[in-house]
Image 1 (cartoon, chains in turn orange, purple):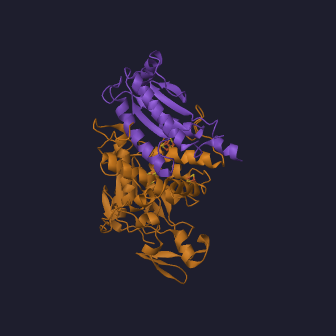
Image 2 (tube, helix red, strand yellow; image 1 turned 135 degrees about the horizontal axis):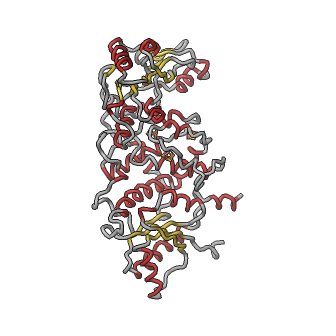
Image 3 (cartoon, chains in turn cyan, orange; image 1 turned 90 degrees about the horizontal axis):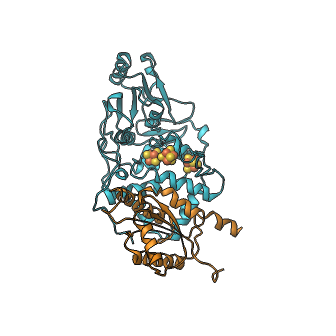
Length: 313
Length: 145
Ligand code: SF4
Ligand code: SF4
Ligand code: SF4
């Protein structure tokens, strides 16, 4: 567990004291092993609580929907920063209202994987992180072996936007980030359906995936709307599939692949293989990546006359 | 069941082109399969993807969305926006395992009555070949249990 570097603490203290921001969102240690918890700091003297290490898994950008129009500072990993960029291009955030502490991230720990390696329940773990090592009572694990699967697939370790940076930039792999999607595409239609059905059979409609997604900022979600009522939350698999198809499709051209939704899911539903298909198609059809250009237009809010027409009868 | 089964196809037709095209097919007495149930919408751009998924959920065996040809939209660009949405939705549903052909798109103008009949025939026959829709279909499940 690492306290923030002094220069970073000083910068945040300065922002808070000058009124440039009224709130700073960072991480602090929690009562759960290997999982930091979001911390909301309004006074410079509380900054000593804040930490940064591989237990800081939450995407703090998700909280900004609760502070619309407010001047807020926050810590972002590479993937989280892409969500900031995506929200800026949707007109949801103003850069001037934000003060951003970027962190170059090597990946964050999946406590469930550590628990599995230690043969213990997550709550029983006696674990801590030093740099890229994860230590349990009697084991010494490499971070790369126990980080979230989504971090292993990460191609955005370094934040695209920040005011102050923690750590040295990390090299991003330059292989195909969508190779697992192409592997699913190569399966037969029935096999893909079986896969999808099985995956969603774990879902219990807790809506954590929606609540945590930085882009699910609608005042009334289709899933909660009563006039008209599109969706009734039942245990019926087809209702669950309906919710998931629509929720993920609402992210088409907007999802930055931060994977906050998959990490938040208490049931371990693999949402990434759904959302990354949309990201892949958006890239192939419209050469757009949501997390890159804060001035751009989301691809479904624009068009080109020569867009692909080959699928039309 | 297979003898009696006829595919049910829900068609969202834009008011200005495809709906008028369907009208023309009717007034010109062009024969086409009676399997489509038409919902008139102001523009193909009005078709929310949720309508399409909900149609499959409610038991449609196929869904057709048809609008004005690119460049001819009554609202200038509604069909261009729609085209992006539909391209992604069609690929996405197929990726998840919905059979290719359940959800189809076409452009049919007000003067293309014969073309409307052709599209409907083509969609009906391809959906017939797929058989009844069971994935996403909430009624299919009830019948099985
Ligand atoms: S699922 Fe759709 S309607 Fe619901 S919050 Fe997300 S984007 Fe909005
Ligand atoms: S859908 Fe999931 S991966 Fe995509 S932006 Fe939202 S939380 Fe991140
Ligand atoms: S977080 Fe997981 S269990 Fe909860 S609604 Fe989303 S997919 Fe389902």
